[in-house]
Length: 168
Image (cartoon, helix red, strand yellow):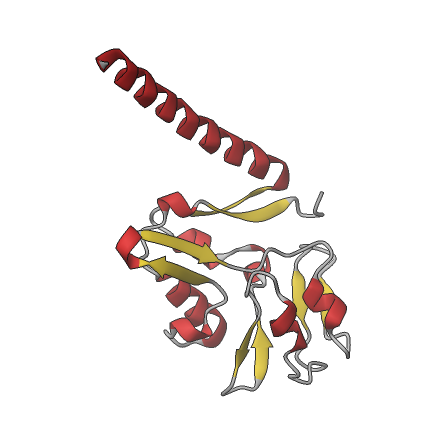
């Protein structure tokens, strides 16, 4: 379990696509309301009404950390998140190319890579998400929350199937 015991859990089914999380993140980290500077990105499929917030998964065996040639990426021991040391980073972008979630980005203006740092234990995306699509929960509870949501979906599907069968 993570030392602070907390992880980000994203429930894309609740996401409305408002992208407030992106703006809050950009303002929090760079002082500018620009979604391109956000550490969380809402992927949108407008025609399906599907919005999926994507952010760093803070991988235990982080490919970005493993590939960094100058060891600028490490794990914070207190909060257990993957962080970038900008005094060491050379901007080679190897980390960007290996991230399986596309969560590592490169800012061409600052010439630096950037990623979610969990706002050092107080994720602002969670605080400002009105739909509660993003939560910062105990690591042990994240699995339970996902199981509960899946069980609810199955229960609804089962009830719908039973209702259809009764009509036939």
